Length: 362
Image 1: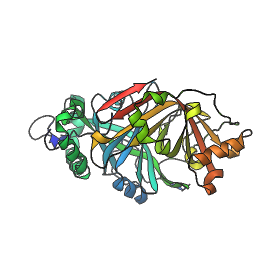
Image 2: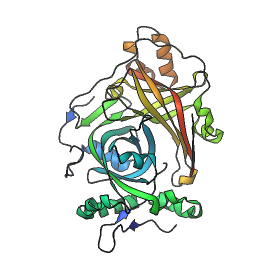
Image 3: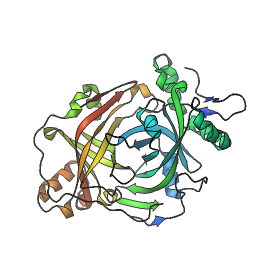
Image 4: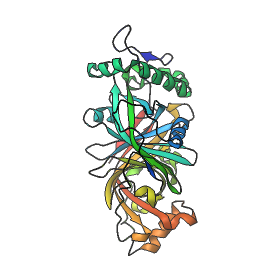
């Protein structure tokens, strides 16, 4: 594999498409950000733009018939949009042929940006994408160039592993994608900092009682032991909630594996759960990953998928003491426990990856 660079989709003089690689397959609401699909590049709020420029990975969610799918990708933020690549055969790329709605999360330090929008793809072998590439040639080339420079260290990693890179991960197997940020929020451990685009907070519904689940063997034990050891039994991750009549919402969470129940507890400030419009039960996916500073072959992780249940202390009529303890055990600061929400997921399916290899367990 040679040095990463743009690929010409139509011949001399036509706009070039970079076909690079990914890693696998409250505040007041502002109203000056663009809705997805508009031919404008109005910026998101400055605080959100700063995080989007500084972040390394974007956790991108799509809706599928079996529930939401959420994986990390490298990206660049340019022209008020998020740009990324993915394999032409990936779940994301296949889903976008029917459903272009996405949700995403980018972290930078103590704050994150969660956003929703629509995606447009640019594929060198798909003639249906060529008119858009022709019209948008200048900003497409600019985004491709900035994508290359921002992610140069990862391309160096691919160069080291060039002899082992599968075709789907090589430039010839990629599509370039642009995500318009219809709405979103800057969030922190304290809740919502600032938002744009969305008219109000949709709220969430919570179950009225909490109790331990019956004992069960975790589906995640079907993932390789080396991956599970790297991830540990608790940490930080990204979780997507998929209400039936809304776009997917990706949240930064603290998580803990509850081995006896074969389940995962994820904790967020209640204000973040209220952004979802979900509950008391909702299709969900939790992504846990062990990243590398520059080499994709050293990265590993898994996505656990299933139906999640939402709980909040102010809503629990029974089991509040046990719920409070579970929130603490997930690593929540003592002064934040009362304002936290717990999202419990007993997965029915697990997708895992390590370097170029991936698999499923169900």
